[in-house]
Image (cartoon, rainbow, N blue to C red; front, side, top):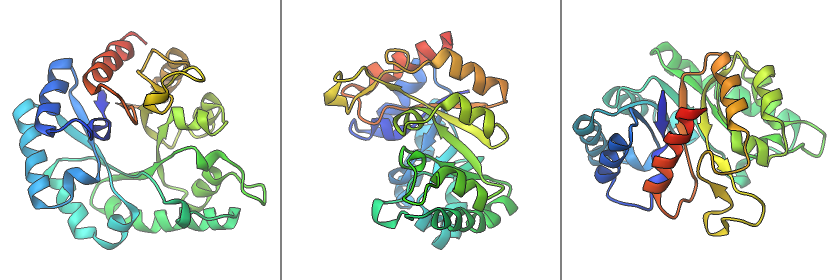
Length: 249
């Protein structure tokens, strides 16, 4: 299933028009993020946008603060938008552990938060950036320790961030193939290019070996492939080129 992380279109309002653009481009699903369910009105607008275009929202991102402290609200949003999997996507720099034990404890914290959502039938996991692959001062790899502390956590693997973190995505796919339930599909521009887009590229138009990586992800049963660009100058260009490329992998 080719989905689209709506964060990619945050700078191109209104979201209702984005839903229409994505449906026309051939997407059947989208992935939510915090601004789309910041309050009841936002939830209703998102729900209406999905209904009007026939798109679904099987996966969604929620902050750790919401997941831990606003459980009824998260469950209400997930039910209203018919989500299946919930991913925690980020932790601010000042809140990041600095030791292997700290990251292990963070994984345990996620595992604890997951229990109530799993009990309600939702998948629950972590979405990475690059910092999880950079060793701590004591030599630990944060992503490993998160999984050690959270033995049942799912993983939405952001492949391009794995690469930017200096790691080999194919090795990580093989090692954690039982954890990966979704993947972010985005691309990295050649060094020095696309500086106005923070060095990202449209899927299939950068340096990531997506044919090999997509094959590896499909081989382990991943179903949710989420197109993302962190800062496109033209979200329609990105959305249409990304799905066209992905269909060819």
